[in-house]
Length: 170
Length: 169
Figure (cartoon, each protein chain N blue to C red):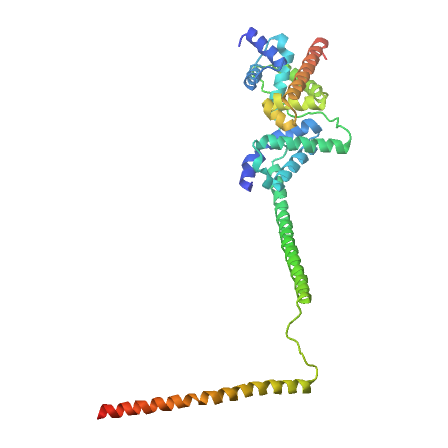
């Protein structure tokens, strides 16, 4: 891989990698550091990249591994919640609805942050990044069955909490 | 999309049976105003969509990455070059050492054949003289024998002279 390929294939994945690292680490500075580390690692190992079919999935996989390494090394999960990224498209919504939505967003964010690690990874990759099941298998190094089970559990947990949120007006 | 279709699609979604395309349709639907009973579900899909725009902060991220990569490049190359030189040097060293030892072994196994047979120079002189005398004797003998050939030569000359005389007559 040369610099040109790096610029066109690898560098544009930065935001996806960042979001994924952020989902796992819960800290934007650390997530950015991880993305930089991923790129440097890829660049240093560029001679061995000939067999990689899906460069983006490969980048995501390294991001996952480096993020998990960081989590292990610090031995605790950050409690910082996701406060950014609520740039909602509001077509025909009243200001009151917008405020309400913003509050709900934060609650949904916490719901997803509270999910077990695998479920959090799968729901992020499918529902936010829109990866196919095959790509998710490749990124997470899981088989199809595990991916589907984790996604099902994640969606069910979120659905249940949404119903509760609505019922109690939390 | 009517409410029945939507309900079916949502049910499929919760059961993880929707395709990527169908999930995209759901996100698109929930962008607009939705019935009261679907508000909480709409929030979830809006959350998913909003998250997609969350990106790396700061515009100099690419520049930082490029800089770091450039810093990595020369280091990696020089290391590999040093390794290559070391490999070649090691190979040469092995060959040279092996050649040296093999030569030593060969020298030990086959000592040079030309050696002095006499340690006393006087005795050596005597022996040389004796050898030369034998050769000289041989030469003398050969010369004497060769002298006899002269007779044939003389006879041949006489015959030729005789032949010429007859031609002129």
